[in-house]
Amino acid sequence: MVSEKTKTIDRLSYLDHEDWHHDIVNEGESQYKRIHENLAKKIEEYGSEKKMDKSQLGKIQLEAGFIFLKIADALKHHWKNAPKDQFWDYPNITSDLNSPEKWHEVSPVNATLLDIATAKYLKSPWMQINTIDLFILRGFIFNELAHYSDGIKSGSLEGRFDLAHLITGGKLEKMLLVKALLGTIKIFLQWILLPMVAAISYYYGYEKTTLSVLLAYTVIVVITILLAPKRYFRNRERRETRNKLAKNVEKLMNVYRMLSYRTLNPSQLRSQLKDLEQYDLYLSPPVYSILDRAIQRDPYVLLEE
Image 1: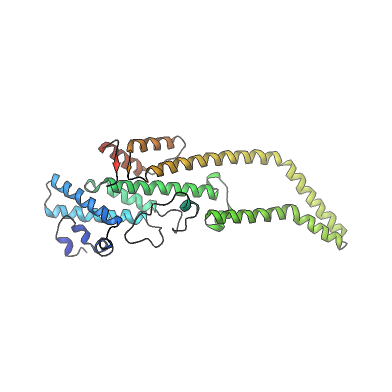
Image 2: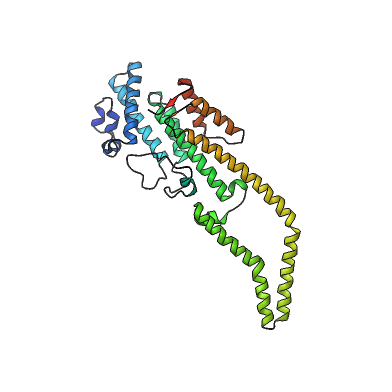
């Protein structure tokens, strides 16, 4: 139920909802405060242009406030202990991708919720501002980058399963340690265990057991040698695939780097996304919708206000 305060319409009246007023506005210079000031200005201009009365203006003010809260929640949905005055953490594309300790998932963003909230945002021209556009773009593109990078680490983009990734949750330093441990265990089981068993059996006089173990070991060695050419070509193919995936990650990183600035060229960004499509990298549809609208407003400048 809307409180009595929200019935008194002024240029900031939608902020009287308790979620905004008590938890956000009183936080001082917060990300939310910057957004609500820009939203208030946009809504006031829109209402004046459409000659809206106070009741109509109040309705879109409240709707804009709730839609933005949904966008903000989607952007920080998996963020552990997110500050009340922030909805975006400006993730570091090296440390946070390699070891996503700050989030419950691979990315802080819930892409499904962001898609739903963005659809409502795009239907509401009275609240569309550059700053919200940029945060939505950052959310979708970083989420794509984070999941693509995790797909490389987990092996899923290569069609394989990585046990070290499963054990460590994708944390790079721990993965390297676990991979080293698993590699050592593999070498021990494949090349050391059977000769050691054969030696122990021979020492205690179990000649038949010794011969059986040595025969099994010989079979393993022969099979390994026969399969060596196949492994060589398979490993070469994997290296080529990994190199391709690594280049794709770098392209996604370059796009995200562009969005880390407060001012960017939307036409140039759109061109970068077009380049990604040549490598079968497609982003969420709202990304293209937001960029195309931004280009219609100004093809050269998209400024975070």
